Image 1 (cartoon, one colour):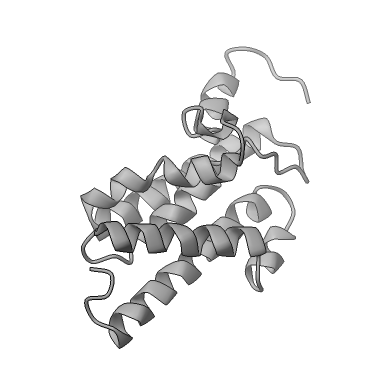
Image 2: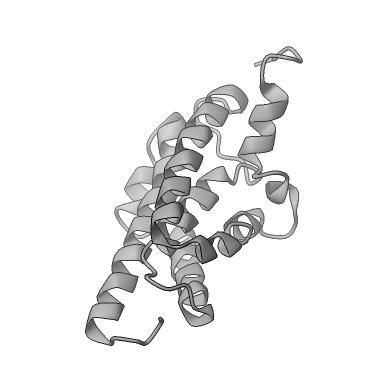
Length: 155
């Protein structure tokens, strides 16, 4: 689909690439996840709020820059939203906790176990966004469980 300049396409691409992180190589999804890691310093509630904001922005951007069944590597706002969801599970952002959240999220996003694989198979922006949100939610649940079973291990 051809878009005219001035209809929000430039802004939508900026959002979709998380300010250009999705254009970095190799592994743009990893870059998209990494670019939000410093936001862990803000704490759990801001990370949760920013995840919601990026989710809404991601759906908006997807509606402008993607075709129905497209999920290009440069579209990484979904990775940012999912990573922030995982980071929201850290009561105190320690280096160990942030690193573990990052590794868990990326493993889930790449391996796509069920229900992440189910979400990934959904059409359009829903599939593009939902798989990363589920990966982030599962990573967050794993972090909460780890904290409950081994207190102090990550923060």
